[in-house]
Length: 242
Ligand SMILES: [Zn+2]
Image 1 (cartoon, rainbow, N blue to C red):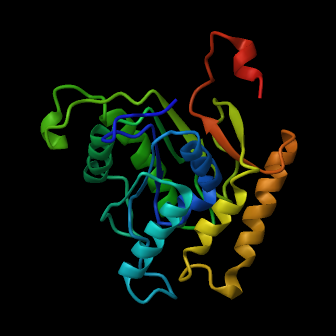
Image 2: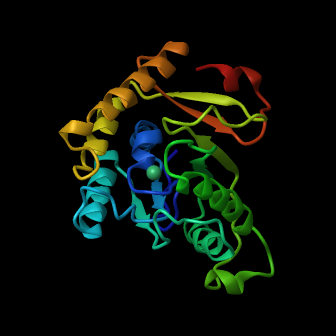
Image 3: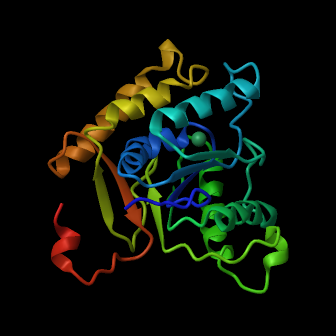
């Protein structure tokens, strides 16, 4: 199902930092791009400073290279502050403005706290949840550069590597990424400042997580998502057949 409108996106994945999305669901996004969907990534911050990156411009260039690896149509890096990202009215509006601009059908974002990793991730979840709601609110266009309302059909949560499974009320979905796992790994390797040789064990973890998730569903590799509500359907067979 190809999207012929060059201005809009079918799917937007929202991360806190450039590399979150690659780690969480790079294989799925690459697969969606192969399938003809227009896929976007929005990073709420540029992820800097970090110990090994000399200049934010380097991280941004790495992010664009990673997006190219995955076949991403649009990658936007917002200017909210790394390390002190907070759910605020302004942050919600900034993200919702992008949702109104690109009119995605599906938004994928963080679905839980990530203890022992950046607290920005949980704030990103709160901002994303709110922005999905703000995008569709009427009589408020002045906050969103005059862009019209847009209702996002489906919101999903991804899993990074650190958090407990999300979504007490949702449904787990595992996407078969057997054919895009290497593309995902290559996209993560674009971040040379974040994953120098001594930190490559993260890639082992990415790979083993994908293999473990895939194995449960009979795939060589998988990525997990949770719906924010029970998954509704009218054709049970089509919905449950792989
Ligand atoms: Zn992150």
